[in-house]
Image 1 (cartoon, rainbow over the protein chains, first blue to last red):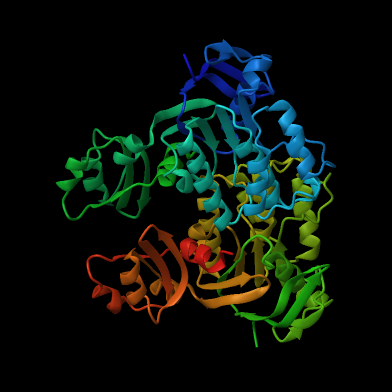
Image 2 (cartoon, each protein chain N blue to C red):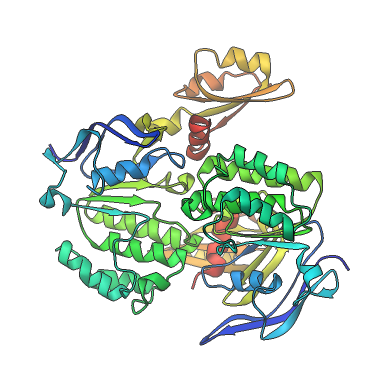
Length: 285
Length: 285
């Protein structure tokens, strides 16, 4: 079987359980979003998959083989994360060369072209870069390693809107040319909504949603009106959150049917939910 | 005159001109966005206003008085920026106490309440915080100092969607209770669009736009269709960007009239522009 399989993985730190019996699959050639609040366990999961830390329980299979301390398997994946594994005094161009040692398919020409497009000066030292350009440096590496499994942990931190748009475009162009597995973990949910095919949501170390983006978006509605009316109409629905303002109530529902809301009375205000609003309601404490 | 007046300010670093004869006013009791790409000069401008660096030319007046090395003036403003001016070994609660020394109106009770709401452990040391929580720590300070002029440089860096929403809400609540001047510099433009009253856009050290948000949004359109048709209809308009795809063209216009586009032929696709798309077109290189 091609793809990544996470089986019953648990990991704890001191007094917190970062991951609690998590099972999930990342199929070959699909684009995923791995979403969660700060501290939900996203980075722990990505670090376990890419062998930087070990789980207390469970295992990760890559193309059916255990990932743990398996160099051959590890060469097939790349994690772009907050930590850079490069000596801070290294120049960017040197870091590119260094990457070629680990990732034989690293495309130096493409990396230099991307650096030019993003205005990244490759003669600079990695440690002298601003937050935005540090992200750009790491993005260029991630886009150039050419591995079948790419994990991007908060890839656009500090990037301006133009560079974010350019990054999403380049990532999609690359994917369309030759599909591979991409897992994007980000807090800028609305911006990736049109890029991702599948959404996995972590909350307090557990998976609370795992489904196709289209399916999730299709059934999400915000229903507002008099409390009694909203209560009647949201009966039997999967209500992920509510708000009260005086006698008025708002209910957020998912997995609902379009047909039902066509028949809603005029006093009810019914609107589609976007992915970010849905996420906020599903993960609020 | 109440408010902040930046008069003909220039500042250069080695081979770049960070600010080039910039003049702009921030009026008393208004919410501004200061937008610009990475390196456009936003942080330089905020650092000059708050006396952390000095301009090569020009001056900054606060309520009519020069800001430069004027302690009384400086006590009336607060800049939340990437650099924290606190000893890294300091605990959060100590940093709060420290702030009270400089800002007599610092509200300790409110700061502790906000820390609780954002899940910030005040017993932790500042340097042990993650990117997201470092921003939250700085936000809590900025919201608690109670000065008439508040400058926020990338306030939501690393915050999850729920915390971003909470921050915008708290900021507006505080502003509505007692209006003060807020200048927000951020790359997450679409999210602040509904919060800000006025937009200032910097490009390569110069101001390229300075107007009311509502006014800017009202006149922005994206016009797509056959090249010839788009060219005819966009004649005489303020075209901020174009894209070509085969024989099809897209033009982005601002300051345009709604009436005109009501009369556009069906072959033209006309859509409203949001603030982030507008910004991208105005600042692309």
